[in-house]
Image (tube, rainbow, N blue to C red; front, top):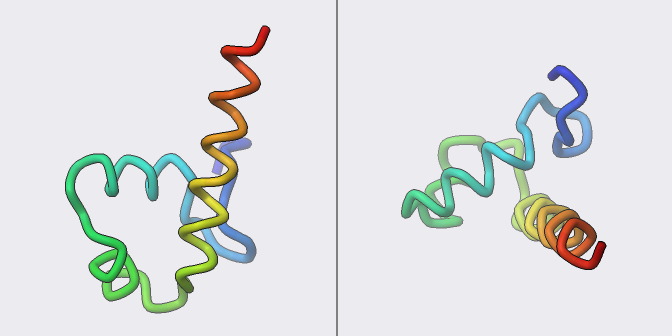
Length: 59
């Protein structure tokens, strides 16, 4: 996936998850669209995105 952060063992990127959520997609819709994801995967993606933002703005 070009070095982008992905959910473990998938080709689903963190940016895809955060983008879909930001566009109004609900977590349950994501889980329906990607049945191999778990709620923990979505939470982990959000934690990762949050840590990247915090890192960038703490410099």
